Image (cartoon, rainbow, N blue to C red; front, side, top):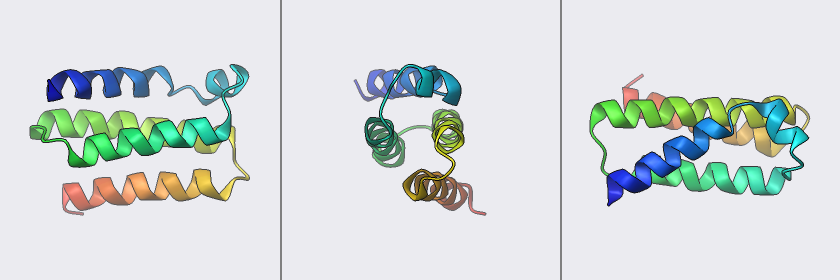
Length: 94
């Protein structure tokens, strides 16, 4: 069941990686950030094997970057990209 949730999260993240498409689709920044926060929590707290966790973080990093690129003047977009990157660094032992 958790793997199914992980796959849904990963697919959702992958579908949002193109910042221009997200922005053009009229998705609000608040809803983009809420989705990113939920994905971050799922990746951080769901028990996943190393390979799955790494793939999930890569999708999450791409999603955070896409949001930041679509909203370059928004502090929350930059902050959440930093949260995602720092969480990944902590996981990777950097």
